[in-house]
Image (cartoon, rainbow, N blue to C red):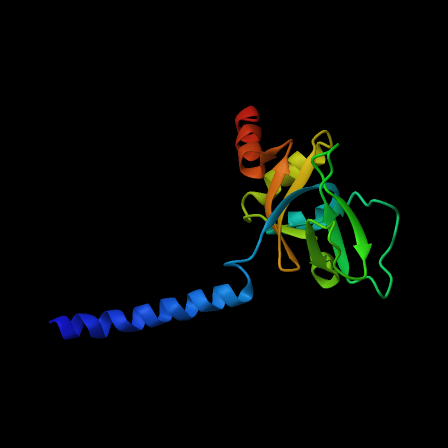
Length: 169
């Protein structure tokens, strides 16, 4: 009986080990993760009406109006003592004053946030009101940037959705 249990459990342990190793190697485990909040300037209403993804433009809060040159490979994030939003600038190589660095290719991919298909039309109506503050929370780890939460007036989109539904019953 013990041998039978071992035969069943051993493949599960090996599979878990392989998955854990893959996660560690990809940078999700053991990586220093920085959390930032970025302001959303605008969104593409056509895309949200089709459901699933909100396409948006980020207000990067650039330190100076510099566009990335052929030599600038990183977006440098620095803490801003006067604002909840970080100060960012394009740089050619890592610098010690940067709290976090994002690869140029990863920055270009930060333009959409997934929403469930049935919730997308209601979130679209909230976005059409134009009198809210829209933000995106992101995680930065090992050069990549990942959106984690969409915020409407500082609250998660789910809580804003519930409030909107309760007000419009």
